[in-house]
Image (cartoon, rainbow, N blue to C red; front, side, top):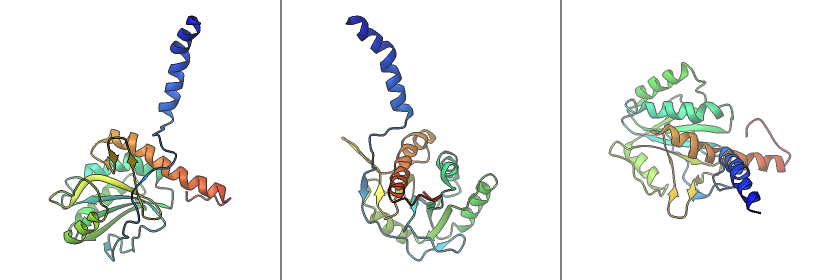
Length: 213
């Protein structure tokens, strides 16, 4: 009996643990809703002149602030860790809300990303800092925007405009820091996979699977 226990601990248990962590399991079969029914974007000008809406899209939403160019490294982290894996899905978009007056800086960032990335799903929209702060407030998040109306965190918004994240025992995971590549590669990537799985499972159930999601 003792021999069997020893063999289990030495050989079987490590394999089970490896499979668990390697699968990227985050404890959720469905990612919890943090804030339901968030507002759509206003009639804000976008970098390419096209209307940007959160309806019907899985959106990675960010608030770049006036220091957009200074913090461009955060966007490069997000681009490498998340965007490049999923930008071919047409129902996925990366929307960065920026203060009016930072259009030239945004263009520089997009041009730099475009040197090695298809930037079709990168969307930059512009609004007054007052409108940005008002919009952020309705997300009902614990953390606030900084003095530049920005944050290094990005948020997952589903197709029905619900903000999704992790509800933990002692804390809630509202967003993901683009300053830390490891956080993007681990927590955010895991949670994003859960969102995509939800939609893929629903499409498969309805026999309507497409190349979108």
